[in-house]
Image (cartoon, rainbow, N blue to C red; front, side, top):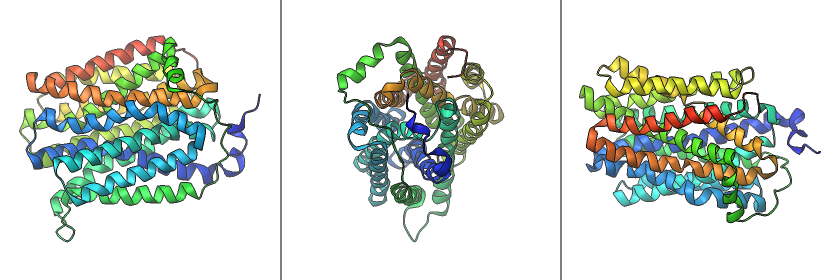
Length: 395
């Protein structure tokens, strides 16, 4: 059987991997929604449920566009689909520079979600053209490490912009959008100039055929696992500062650094995970990661000191850092002849980023931020169940 995904790796893998990894950096721009929603909530005087509409809206588009993107890749190729996603992402980041009304931000976040849905669906399978199957999980984890760098820089850049006010530009914290828009344009340029020999397109398929893959028990388990992973990710991103503000009465400008802490530990987790997964079975490593998150939820339910809250956030950051790579690679490798369709389904699972923040917003208004933590705990318990269903050997 031919293995075209490994043919060109020896001579040109580095030249190909660098632009692809820059695309992973651009993929991380979606995580600015947690930081941005907190600033927009502050600027416009919104309630928790209103502010949580922004991250929910971003991830709503994963439900709509992921499966069609899987079919689009069959027509125009994975690289061209990634280029399209980067162009949409750049546009979404330019729009907020011209206003901050509720409507403008809804449009910007919608485009950000659409661009990221298309990017995540197409970029991960594109990597499989460059990497052998037994190294896919560790390579995707390294990509998540690069993605996490953009994620943890977002609150730092926004806080710097808010503190300096940037009077020349009149942008304040929104300088974040300008910087990331420039990075998106750079990603488009480099990837466009990079030759990549893609696998022959998957057979033509329709939405119904893609969705029927959910009838396979393990694919369904992976889909729900992705939903829980991203729900915990977006939930922590959005809720961590609110826990600190509620329990310690700190201002947003100080509390927002909790989001950076989360992404720093997620970044460290991705970096170390890329090496650990070469030596340890995905099941064992995922089990340890889920145990960390479960311990963190217990801490965040009752913690009243900044140190304990930071410990809980750090544990979630490290524990959740490799869940996506493990689950996604398990799904892809379980259906090697239907990678585009499976990728679309798995990225559709990022719709969990809509479900969890909405539920957390209503729970926090009813029970305080402990209610939001309870919603995330449901996701952690599911991932514990998923771990027991995985094969113990490497895939």
